[in-house]
Image (cartoon, rainbow, N blue to C red):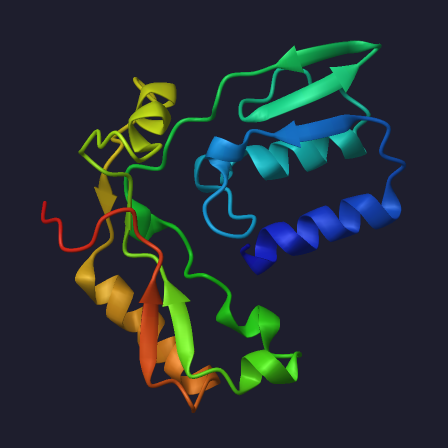
Length: 171
């Protein structure tokens, strides 16, 4: 969960009476509460709440307003993963357990081109059909930059965990 989204949501929940129930479609989540397709929709949601405007048509959200549930389509995928900010690895440093961690998680790709019978990816790919390139790969320079950043935060880091659907795929 990027700190930008965390602070926006935290501020909204603590300062605005929230009378709208939100269900963020699970397929818009990557890892713990990251919104890859919702980079632009989270701020839009918060601005509408602040302005007391309807949220019933924001992509990536299911919203209950006036007793009716509005099930919006998923938001478009972000084609260029390197345009997204790095994960906020400092977010968990306040916890001793994480400060001592020797393995740090990273995501280098999103999506998978295969349709294995034991995996959910073919369903997820169908959900996002027409919403952008499903299989996306971060630039190597960006991955290295994020790892160097994380290494400075976690001096015990001696290995990485890759939270990718498929490892080793090339453009």
